[in-house]
Length: 157
Image 1 (cartoon, rainbow, N blue to C red):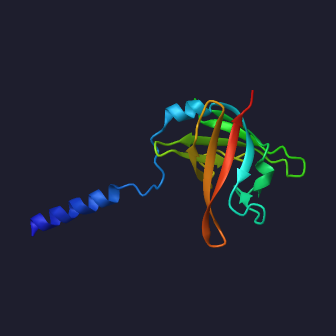
Image 2 (cartoon, rainbow, N blue to C red; image 1 turned 60 degrees about the vertical axis):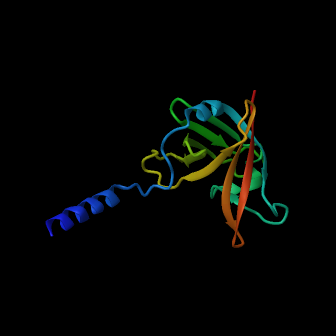
């Protein structure tokens, strides 16, 4: 009976110590350094974009992000995002971000709040990283279907 209780205790301890976090926290420093600098979004595309409006990051219509300016600082995982399109809100926010070993960019818009206090964040896939461009892909639900929204970034000189 003692052996059964000890084994059950060990199983409970192992299960309770298992991480429930769906986002890996081991950093991909090489990709982070590749993104260091100033960028603009040159296009936002998704199937049906000519008919369906998507609000990106719960901020503004996705097309307002075309031309937006982003800075990524890799040594402290901070940065800034600024919407610049005339017909849009003119939103501006500091961000905190990192890229994990699974190729996911984990990002929060801080909006005057410390990162620890901001409980809303976004997880996007980083792809096609070159010296002058990369893509972020957000998987969203549009009309009951999973859809990829592709943000194409180009480096500013």
